[in-house]
Amino acid sequence: MSFKDLGLLPELLKALKSKTYPSPTQVQRDLIPVALQGQDAWVTAPTGSGKTLAYALPLLEQWAHSISKNQPAGVSKLAYAKSIKTTQSLVLVPTRELAVQVSQLFMSLSAQWGHLCKITVVFGGVSINPQMMGLRGGTDILIATPGRLIDLLEHNALKLSAVQTLVLDEADKLLELGFQEELQSILRRLPSKRQNLFFSATRPQSMVALAQALLLDPLEIHIEGKTLQPAEILQRAIHTDMGKRTQLLKHLIKEENLKQVLVFVATQHSSEIVAAKLRVAGIAAEPFHGLLSQGKRQQVLADFKAQRVKVVLATDLAARGLDIEKLPAVINFDLPRSAVDYTHRIGRTGRAGEAGLAISFVTPESLSHWSLIEKRHSVKLERECIPGFEASSLVPEKENGNGGVKGKRPSKKDKLRQLAAAGMPLTQ
Ligand code: ADP
Ligand code: MG
Image 1 (tube, rainbow, N blue to C red):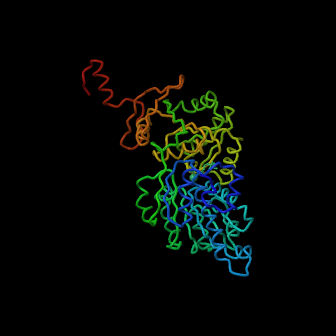
Image 2 (cartoon, rainbow, N blue to C red):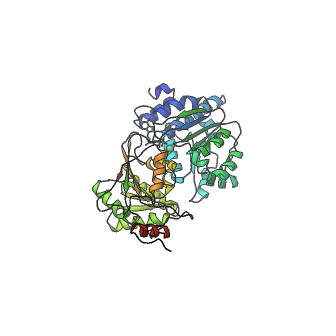
Image 3 (cartoon, rainbow, N blue to C red):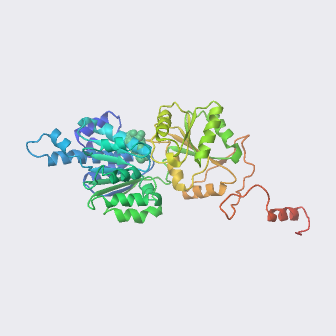
């Protein structure tokens, strides 16, 4: 099937030609005809399967149709398109970088119409004034992170009363507790009669009831293999010690000849520390986390995409949606908190049918957590040991009652067992 078979407008087909996409991906084939009919849809499809284009095309096509349909007699299309800018479509995404990425696709696809179709992107961390100015006279399609959108609504910079289609990209993230208040506040300002299109690579149970309450008779599209991962990602697990991970990382970058790698760490602090250590070793490495200025965040990402930076040490801020073309590898320096986060993190590689490598460092402290992640993904990876970086122990360290990880000192019971094993009397 070709894009032409999907019944898209010539302007969009022309825009697609310049992107040299051979044919629509499965999610695009399944969704586009339904979305064009105005039906709600709830799409779960793997990372890198082309979900953005799957909703961008119908949204733009709907915009073009609404202009043709409503254009009054005697008024030129240009004059009419300029006169009605009412935020017809709203796309919500969880992170600023994703907002920029999505808007870039919309802008390139709508270029065929000149400036007739106005695409606007708003996100936090930068001055609000230029965004308020940008919204003067309205917009056609708005891509936003929730917090900044609310700020703009409170400044009366726009209205959402004419929204016909709402897209939640990374819907499961946006429906999480952390975003719930903001999302509810936005939903209250939308017309109740609208089209809803939800997209994500993961569908945790916790989102199901909320999604069902928001969607009206949706078409459910579920595209997944046996596990949640696209087959193109080779997953590996390396057993090591906490204190050997930075050296192991350096070793792998060199020995595995990794051209570029996105490394996930647990905290902003580790992101800075490990990046600094790699830089000392002559490796172009940068931290990427929420405490950096937005300018710095965008710079790091741009440098990474342009391959001026070899290693980015990121928190989960970079786990969702980012499309770094041909990124060869992802490393979990610290394991993700959940199996869902694992899917999103490793999904930054192996996109659009490319091969990818995902390596997880597993330490005695994180071994039982790793087993849980494996179980949720129905995989059992061989635990590799790299000479010189072996773990001191191959058994999981039990966690103590405070949620912390037990230290290496033997407990009272361990001491008693050792004494018993050595034939000593068990006295206290
Ligand atoms: P997802 O949102 O499903 O994780 P994206 O929409 O970010 O994936 O797309 C992943 C990559 O696939 C992007 O680089 C995009 O340009 C590319 N892509 C999208 N559609 C196609 C297609 N039909 N053929 C080839 N590549 C595509
Ligand atoms: Mg996406």
